[in-house]
Image 1 (cartoon, helix red, strand yellow):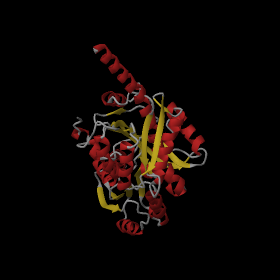
Image 2: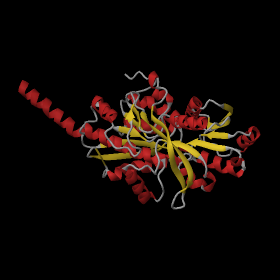
Image 3: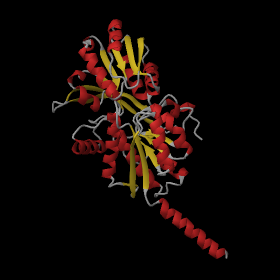
Image 4: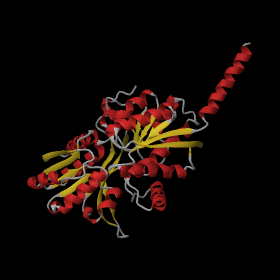
Length: 388
């Protein structure tokens, strides 16, 4: 009898193992419509390009990627995530652009013990007191690119600065990050509505202040409209504009064009980085989509490569949460930004660079890497993270 039971138990274990390794399901929820759609589309395209390179597999197992539009709505995001977790039973999740949406769905994802690989949103809450073993950010912590701009503006000696940012968690992290390293006078902090596209009132306010520099963080369509209106109003003649890479990347440059020339921005990645992984990514992306990739696309690409390496490490046994966490922490993939490591809160420790917008050898208006602002830079919240 005991032999029969032992054989039965072994058979059940084998059956469970085969079932677990049958296919990897990924839930990809992102903003694919509305003013922020360009960001989600770039993350999706970068992710899909990596999946094409991986022949549709993660860790040598067939992968099914379920894609949904959150419409930049926390309620829609929660509905889609609930479906992916409870009905579709996805193994991994990624894709969300905006931090308010990430904060809305995070508790449900973590309670379900599903690993979320963020290809963008990096709220301070999940870097600090609300950190979770099930949350990894393969991009950055929200403050980091703003910190880098703050250091640049400080080092350049600007004395009178206006800040413009949306009134939502990511925008507040932007201000905190910038002011952490810029110690000069902030004449005004201007908070706009998330998704706002008309900045006449804000531009009138800036004109009255006459700052020597302006720092803005307005992702997607918000930034496109702001830069167009700022330059059209003639404000760029007397005010140096600086931004994080979110508001000065290829998606914005493509829409705005020459008026962006002379603008400085910060990023952890640039399309002109010389490492082999990045050269392949940029060439493949241009061939596939007929445009230069943005930092969002690079992050989507890295998210897929990170999943692939981790699933391979655990030999497809994604149900072994402890092993999968260790595999994700190990980061056994080559990032397009070069080498980096995960801190104890699962956020990157990495370099941040200064980029300037001008014309390249082909006459394209684009970013050029000018130098390094931070080396092996960690976020400011890691000491608050007590990972369980």
